[in-house]
Length: 58
Image 1 (cartoon, helix red, strand yellow):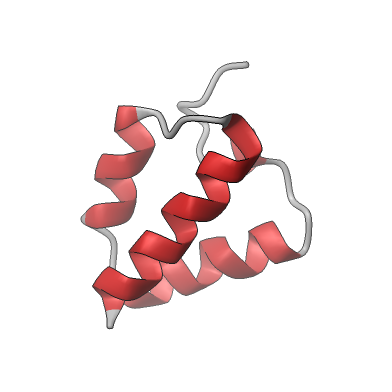
Image 2: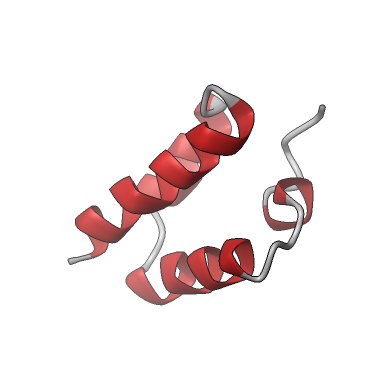
């Protein structure tokens, strides 16, 4: 189940940034399902991506 959630989250990030940074992809793919759920909820609440993934620089 975590794998499917990870794919959804990565698609959400890609829609906002155009591409998914490697560091974010690695973090998401190695995360627990509960962490992924938290990131998805935060994105739905319109929290900035750089707040969720500090390694992203715009």
